[in-house]
Image 1 (cartoon, one colour):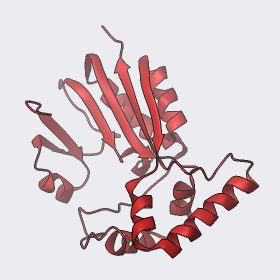
Image 2 (image 1 turned 90 degrees about the vertical axis):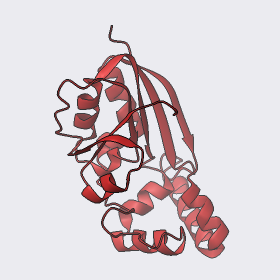
Image 3 (image 1 turned 30 degrees about the vertical axis):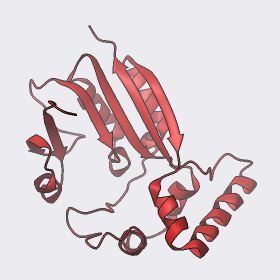
Image 4 (image 1 turned 180 degrees about the vertical axis):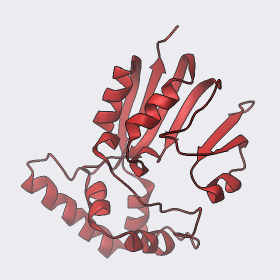
Length: 196
């Protein structure tokens, strides 16, 4: 956003160095960081919380930095979707191959480059995140679900693998009576700080 000043927190030195938008770079863990007296109008967790052991701790620390009326944006994977379950069941090296050969990211898996190892802690599910934000006294103003660009890339570049993935999702949906294996793979949550 034009005129905005960005503070970026990352546990990866390489990721921080690559970030061109940061006015301030903080090397640290979002679960344990002390922000001091910093105050922010918005906190953004974009594909972050699924990589943490305690997403709740990161949300609590971020919440404490928000100005009145400040916003929290959380984007992440739907853990019980076909993609989320497939990610949990496959080793990390397969994720690297996917990023290199399907998404065509030649540096995939190298320090500072996705894919990053995931925790998929239960606290990273979108229902848990929305619940945590409400417990913190925030108004959850938007929750949306959609299909990731990764799934579209698989369909466009390797159709046979895409149809295997679709069959896997159908099997999950059928055997669980629709409780797991959904087609939507990502979520976005927006919450507003009600603190005065």
